[in-house]
Amino acid sequence: MALSPKLELRQSQSLVMTPQLMQAIKLLQLGSLDLVAYVDAELERNPLLERDEGEERGAPEASSEAPGGEAKAESSADGEAGDYSMEAAEAAPDGSGPALDTAFEADAPDIGERLDADYTNVFQDDAAPEAVDPTRLVGDSWSQASGRGGSSEEGYDLEAFVAAEISLADHLAEQLALAVADPMRRMIGRYLIDAVDEAGYLRTDVASVAEKLGATIAQVEEVLTVLQGFDPAGVCARDLQECLALQLMERDRFDPAMRILVANLELLARRDFAALRRLTRVDDEDLVDMITEIRALNPKPGNAFGSTLVQPVVPDVVVRTGPDGGWLVELNSETLPRVLVNQSYYAAVARSAKGEKDRLYLSECMQTANWLVKSLDQRAKTILKVSSEIVRQQDAFLTNGIQHLKPLNLRIIADAVGMHESTVSRVTSNKYMATARGIFELKYFFTSAIASAEGGEAHSSESVRHRIKELIDRETPDDVLSDDTIVKMLRDAGIDIARRTVAKYREAMNIPSSVQRRREKQVLA
Image (cartoon, rainbow, N blue to C red; front, side, top):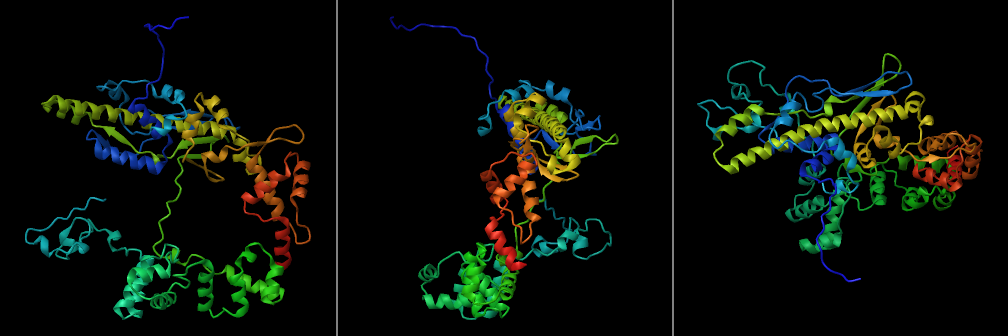
């Protein structure tokens, strides 16, 4: 058969990933903090967007109709994006495009891969800017900040008087200035302080410091010894053993037996108390006291100074008991950024646009603004829809506890809500649900299944972990459970599980083996 070129016409359907659809998919998988940062960036970039500063409006919520926890989703029109008009958004120029529902359901798993405060100082006419001390300004009232006239509390900002948290480097530098007078030694000390990490450990080699500064190793060691005597105890240590030794020296408890114990921390980690008794030559009571002292020390002394602020988890979804005994599922309005499309500003600027370039820019801004508003609203509705189905599936967990957590996967939720699995995966990423039993990530409710020994309903792997921990917590020094014993007890309870699975779950919970637990319980008994 001869090969020859020819022309053919073929008709096919495909989803075109426009930038707007990519934006919608990207917003779906963002957590609340990342979403706020993204919206703030869009507000700065797009002049047609503005933040909704009005009264808080009801977010989309789901209410339960049956005591069994079967929830249905209800959403208000203003939803996540606030008081915008969907009709105006659809009628805006270049605002057309495929529905987001369809886009979310048809997206492929790899689509996700493509995807200061305003300080104002108001000066009086007779005050020259050069004479102003900015540290004394509070709010926007110069007369009040300078103490000249007026006792009004307007503009009074208590946060201006809050002292900044001191960092570890600053704390050490203050002590260095008092302890060392020689300029060369002070320079060496300053260099070493800069090499101390947040935990308080020195992350550089003495020899390399001496070479870079043109000093001798003895000089660097001498300065390091001074730094290691600073507060907090244990700072500027080069490893964990040195950190603990410095703290014990501060307490005058670094005797020969304690020195041997600190030098053999690996035996302590393995709970090999028999070997530690032989090395330290102390009895069980003294060994227990020494171990107790070791555990009271701080392995990261630098964390008390200038530590990074830990952002608390803010739930995206709140679940509470309804008046009829069912579950009410609603979005947390505090995590929903509300933005508006300023139609009047667009109309005013569009009338004064002179060139084609200006009109094209305005059209692109309007299109982007409308899509952002639609995407935020669709994101809220999708999260609510998926969360409501999760609550319906895990009703037994919410009612009775972790022992009743059901095995669940993405396909079950996707089939129930009529979405693609990849969409459900994006919805449950970096999202949290507040329940009466605590705050859980949405991913927490998706656990693998462990078969029942009697052929009944499967058990959740998370509930099985909880059972294993409960069994081990109830152990006595004379009755420590081996993995085989735990397997037998679980099978008697109707859970078909292998010994290697029990060992894997036990290690994941940082629970030592039965031999190590027996040693520890016998010593501490």
